[in-house]
Image 1 (cartoon, one colour):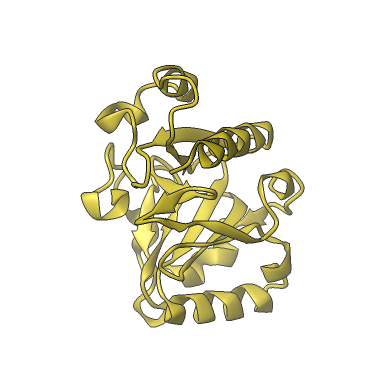
Image 2 (cartoon, one colour):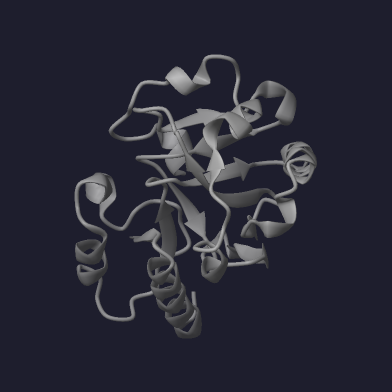
Length: 194
């Protein structure tokens, strides 16, 4: 990762934080937290301060406080999630990132997220991916993995504060029946971290 890309990560971190999101440093060209397993218990500011100034890194966004991310991992999930969000009339309003694998991250603001809900796999008929709501994170632009970037296709951190807050019940189509009852986890499984 070039020094220019590292500067962009720090600028994007600042933009997300100004938008009310929690950003954490991830290892350069990877999806793992720079703070290791302590990312959940170490305040974000301390994680950034622990990095040498300007050190290349990736950017992670911690889900929570109503900031949720629909993580569509493949073309099938992207098509199906796009169609459902368009039907709700919100597809053109959400910040959307393209992932290096061709998937998408859809950032939304939800209320009435069930207590203890962290994340769940998307309903099988939608395709591969997860709904991430708390105690988990996603890699965010301008991060790179395997040399390929995460890129905003629409919106960005500046659009998050103005998003219409939606109700959890409007997004239950994302999950298999009963998924909202997932137990709270302290550390997501490795599959969700890598």
